[in-house]
Image 1 (tube, one colour):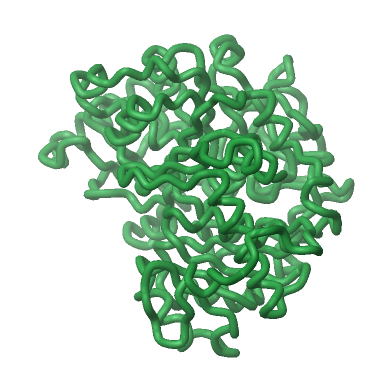
Image 2 (cartoon, rainbow, N blue to C red):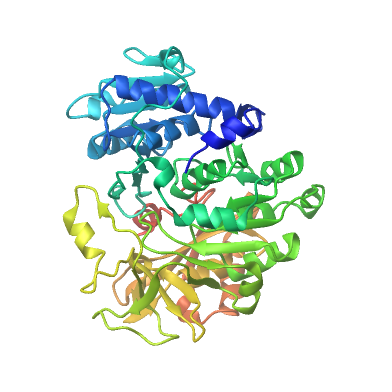
Length: 506
């Protein structure tokens, strides 16, 4: 996993193009920047296994910081840019970060960290494109460092924190391989090499503090492929970026598909997307009808994989396969899928249970031995708490998350089914379904909807929508009532902060 060979062979080729600003970082520049920062890290005492926290938006610096950490044998922690100073400080403290690299856009968060850090700020503090008392300016602070590799390169790794949709974020840590970067094999590298080609142009539309965008974009760069990075996702902007830069490949999340599909047809049809060859989506279940609409629009090029930040296993399904197995997330690539009931017994095809993977990478939840142990069964198979089933052909289907299940009158209800149906309605932009306390039934089903046109958020439309849904789903799966929100609380990868809604409507 290196960009060095491409920096030598094609130093002026764009490694990164930011959209919409148009800022370009070439492979030669990316290699030099990463080397200078790696030397700086070593000069200031960082050694293999140490941790660097990154608080940056999608900008021209963030990839160089990740590459510098990666080739220095360091763990790097990209932190969600929407967190409060206290929330970000928790991750800095919990990870044991010895350095923070931030940007001027996050000055308010950076300046508020110290008051919530029990041991104070780390010694190494860099801020890009701005000034902050006690922090050194980046990249000026590393300008005099050599642009050649450090002598003791070792492979580092991403130390990803979960999105915290069900509680405090959890650090997901893997053992370092203790080998130079070029000696590290990787399933991702093989997948990118199989799926793409050196002349491809890859669109990365999501924030780089998430696992898939950071890992995929770095693997793409390691393959000598240009990455077009959206500085912020915008539905029409994504289409414009595809047309403007001749994008051939990209990775999306389902909520992005929904946003693009809800654009007026005249807008969608005004962009030339003929350069697209394959796109991938993941991160959250995609409603069947939404994916059908995307394939109708873009052609049978919409592939899908299912994985997690824990990297315990992954499945893959091409668009062509999906058309014969609609709703599936594919077959296992490297691990064996097992579906277990609450007692740990393996279930036959067609029966839903908790999804476990046999094989895959080992990991721990940092500083949480109990949580780590709860993710394993007696065989050592690992789970992240998703519910699903396999069919007779071995294709996996996701039902929901274990902690999202509603128990109403003793009946298990998976709200994802109603959510997937609601977003198909032409007047619905987004939807959430969850359980709220009910004296008689234990829990009752509640729906919250964001409409495409805010003027449709009326009691009359709520009743119309309930009637529409009951024509398509069993009544017990449907909400008893629907409320409206201007916008649902989601992460940038589409995960719902359901706890916020549950608190509000309970």
